[in-house]
Image 1 (cartoon, one colour):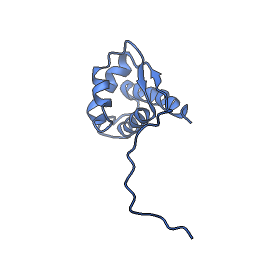
Image 2 (tube, rainbow, N blue to C red):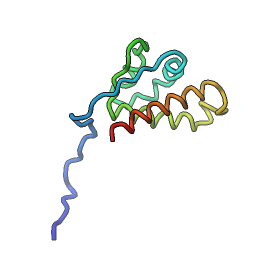
Image 3 (spheres, rainbow, N blue to C red):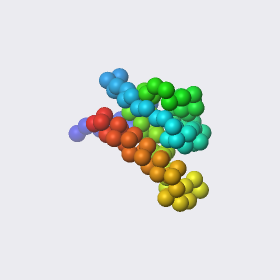
Image 4 (cartoon, rainbow, N blue to C red):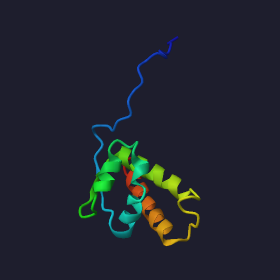
Length: 110
C-alpha cells in the first residue's frame, strides 16, 4: 500500500511552458469599460499594469492564467449589484460581450 506524503512543498501556480499566448484585441468602449476595473486585477501577476498601459492598438497577448483571471473577475463584476445594478445598461452588455470572447479564447486552450 502506497502512502501519500502530505508534507510536500506547495506547488506554485504558473503557466505551462507549452502554453501559447492568445492574441486578443480589446478596443473602444470595451477597453474603456475594462479599464475602470483594473484595480481588481492586482492579484493577477502584472495583468493590472498591462491592462492600465494597454491602448488597444495591437492585440494583447494573454496566456491561460491571464484569461482565467480576466474571466473570473469580469464574471464577479457582472454579478455585482454595486457595479452593474441593471444588467440592461450598455456598459453591462459590453462586458458580457467581452466576457464571451475571452471565455471562447480560454476554452481554446483545452
